[in-house]
Image (cartoon, rainbow, N blue to C red):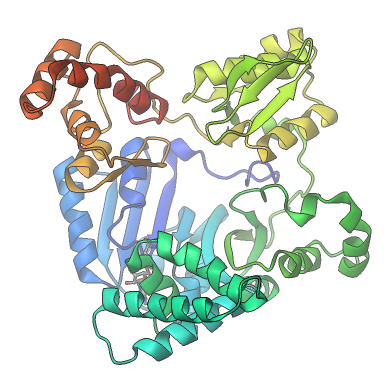
Length: 467
Ligand SMILES: C[S@@+](CC[C@H](N)C(=O)[O-])C[C@H]1O[C@@H](n2cnc3c(N)ncnc32)[C@H](O)[C@@H]1O
């Protein structure tokens, strides 16, 4: 996002990153593994998660990541300066002095071109969450066990919902919140809705707070997804008139429209020039990737492109078809525009202002992704496939893993998990099969074999396998 907005952040390959309140380092440790020449520092007030993270780091033998137990009210310049600072799930859940120091640290410790990521519960949508939270807390004051509190709180909300008539607005609101909370891990509901400190903020107040620490709004971490009101042309005249030429005021008005509940905001120093229109040249500094698969279209001369979730786009522009087909077959690798240019130019796609606007539309539609670096992922399943040591370590302890693309991969199937643990680069297909047959001795041998290639392909496609 920083590159798109015309800034020059540090190259990912050699970045220095701080995570404030990093928990057990579940975010930081996979980044440190995937970016061996980067340097990563994290701290958290809670000792036990830090010790768990330190143990993981020791086991992995990583030298470029350090976790320590500390209070953000007590740390400062001794940590050095950082290219990127992350504070996820902290700002809106801690008391005012801690929130203030959090942004103070970002202002003090960021290098001149540095970027901070801060997530928070946003208003006005969080008023609805406050309402649910207060009812859940009221019903559960006497309980100590967090899981029990969450279960009781949800039970109360369900009772309220069921007591209302069908098609009732209040019932609908309760249902909307319940659907989200019931799908989540109770630990997350406990932290997000039921902790003591709960301070959702308006975007405009957050930005004003950041400004007091020498920071300005760059963008949010992701471009809004369709059908966000910012893309609806019929709303723009009224929005522009109410915004009176002020982009930040417009963003706040949009949050009113969105009934915004949560934000992941990027900040940079106030003296940086943030370009709100994405210039063509910025795309040359980025890498492109696409999860699409090209499929035949019924429209003459067109090709359809399908995303894993089922979203489909058709194009009859040869340049776009060439771009998406090439990226789709390169996935999960990302390619620089210089690698794509000969192919797309030959098919009539030019990266001028119009081309840049079109690329952004493809990004918003999730047909292409923009990356600031090339993750070290395998393009094919090697003879002796090697999964990242992070994934293998996580597979031993939990039911999901963090890929080299820094995405969560579900490992619910015990066979998939067992196979992943075996992928240390020493076994070929036959040896993998033998090991899996030994481990799942109760299963038909053909069934074990039938599952092998799809699972290996899945690991390759999700960026679990190393280049
Ligand atoms: C929801 S957790 C978020 C952890 C991690 N950032 C994540 O996204 O998984 C909030 C974290 O803030 C930490 N925290 C709260 N107050 C803190 C302080 N004053 N200094 C450092 N960490 C703090 C808590 O210990 C907790 O681990």
